Amino acid sequence: MKSLMACHECDLLQRIPPVSEGRVALCSRCGAVLFRPKRNSLDRTIALNLTGILLYAVAVSFPFLALKTQGFVREAALLTGMKVLYQQGMSGLALVVVLTCILFPLIEMLSLLYILLPLKFGGTLPGAARLFHSVQVLKPWGMMEVFMLGILVSMVKLAKMATIIPGTALWAFVLLIFVLAGSAVSLDSHLVWEKLDRRP
Amino acid sequence: MSPAPLTAREANLIGCRLCHLLIPMPKEPGHCPRCGARLHQRQPNSIARSWALLIAAMILYLPANLLPITISSSLGTSQSDTILSGVLYLLNSGSWAIALVIFVASLFVPLMKMVILVFLLVSVHRRSRWRPKDRTRLYRLTELVGRWSMVDIYVVTIMVALVRLGALANVDAGPGAAYFAAVVILTMFAAESFDPRLIWDRMEDCDE
Image 1 (tube, rainbow over the protein chains, first blue to last red):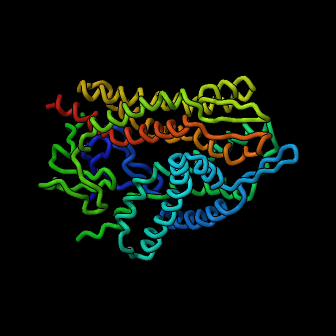
Image 2: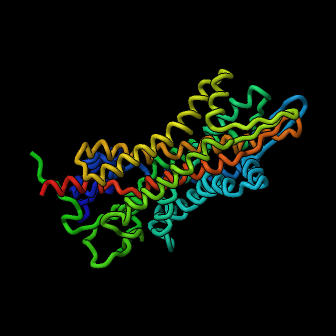
Image 3: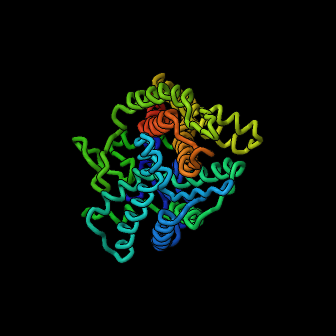
C-alpha cells in the first residue's frame, strides 16, 4: 500500500509513482500538494534550525529598536511590547503575541532538532512521532514573518515623528526570518514520517 | 479517458489527514498508528463547528472595528484610532503604501475570509457540484492568508513598546485590538475546522 495515497483535501485514492527530488506530487483531482521530496532535506533542515536557535537567542536578548526624539531616547527589546500590553491589563493580547512570535517558533525549532538529529544517525528519541505531530499542528500559529511586516510598518509610521535606531536584535531577527523560511522549504515531512514509522 | 475516481472512503480505507498514512478502515474510531492524530473519515461536526466559530468571529468583528485599537496622547491631547481611522490617517499623511498594507491585512482579508467561508459552508449545505476544484482553491487561499491579518496587532505591540516618552508622546493599546486578535484567531480555527473533503463528497454522490 506504500505507493497508494489518499489526498488529504479531496480523499481521492491515487497511485503515486516515485517522485524525484525537487519535483512535486500533486493530487490529480484537486491539485493539492501531496508531497515534495527535497535534496539533502535532513541535513539542510538541521543546519538551518541550529542557525535559527543562535539567531533567536540574539533576537530576544539584545535591544531591538530605539526611538530618539528631542533628546529623549526610548529603547525596546523584542519582549518589551508584550510586557507593556500585560501591564496595561491586556494580558490576553500579550499572551497571543508571546505565543505566536516568541514561544511557538522556539518550540518548533527545538522540536525539529530533537526529531531530526537522531534520524540523521538512524535512531529516534522517545515521543518523536507525537512531537512531530504537534509541530505540524502548531505550524500555522508561528507568525514571526508577520511580525517582521509589523516592524516594517511601525518603522515607516514612526519615521515621521522620530529617529529610529535599529538594534542588534533587529538584524538577528531579519536573518532569522530567512532561516525559518529556508527551514520550512527544506523540510520534507513525508520523508520524516516514513523514517519515524516504527510499525512492524 | 480517465478511470472512475475512487476515494479512500469508498475503498473502505482511511487516510490520516496529518501524516497521510493510508490504512484499512478501523472498526472503531481511533488514532493514527504512525503520528497519533485522531482518525476520521471526515472531520466530526466540521460544518457545525465552522459555523459556530465563524459566527463568533462575525460578532466580534463589530467591536474590533468600532472600538479604538490605539489611544495616542501627545502634549496633553489624546486621540483614539480605530482600524479604519488609522488607515485614513495614513492615507491623508501620504503613507499610501502602509495604508494599503494595513487596509488589505486588517480590513480586506478578514472580511474576504468570512465571506469565502460562508460561501463554502453554504455550498456544502446545498450539495453544490459547482467547480469543486476552484472551491478547494478558495479554501486553500483562506488558510494561507489568514495569519497575515495579525500584522496590525504586532504594529500595536511595537508602538506601545517604543512610543513611551511620558508627556511628549505615548501610545496605549485600545480594547479594539483584543477583539481584532480574537477575530483573526477565530477565523483561523473556523478555516481549520472546515473539511475540504466535504466539497468533493457531493461529486461522488452524483457519480453513483
